[in-house]
Length: 289
Ligand code: GUN
Image 1 (tube, rainbow, N blue to C red):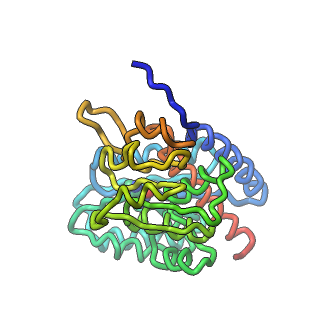
Image 2: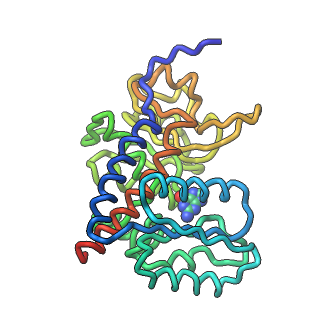
């Protein structure tokens, strides 16, 4: 079966290549000043998906000329040992960004660990300082996935001012920061979630829809206004085991003006924005900010 796609694809791989080459050039400039941006990635336990994610993050650093350290520890690592490791990394001048891969084993308080990361090195943007800075429009670090979504909208020249944006999902990592970023660009923002009574009534009003719930087919063609822009943050496996997003791509791509594919959409952008944040952290050190 051939699927005729009416919507233009927003290609996360192509945009990532462009942004990562900019990261590489800025990194080269910084290196001439004697500073190599450094990222520490901390993995506790043997979660297979996390192992793939951290390997990809370290590889991306190497490809753009950043220094990276992978700290791999067994699931039995104690919370206090992890807090001590973060403290060491906080005080290591060769490290500008610290990422503790989530989820952490159940015996470790993830929020406590996140709050132990120096806000100047919080390249994941998960620290309450980073969340607060985003909320009041102060400089900080934006969480990588919604930041990547904003870059995708920017790449197609989408003017958010006065547009209606509907975010499906209210997680601290994607939905909530996404809504704040859209708001900062003067969109009218609606956040929908599992308690929303009539999701379709909301999404039909949207000029841009960001789906970030982690459920297959949350958004189908009948729920999308013709010409809307659709960003799919989902990363799921369908009944056949195939990687797919939250959006019914085949149907929605007949209605939307632009759509992100899964894979090859938001996924690569998340790592790209991690590189951008790490570089930014190092640049702030370089200028003494
Ligand atoms: N687990 C899944 N995605 C992420 C992410 O972006 N950052 C961290 N720290 N953990 C994750």
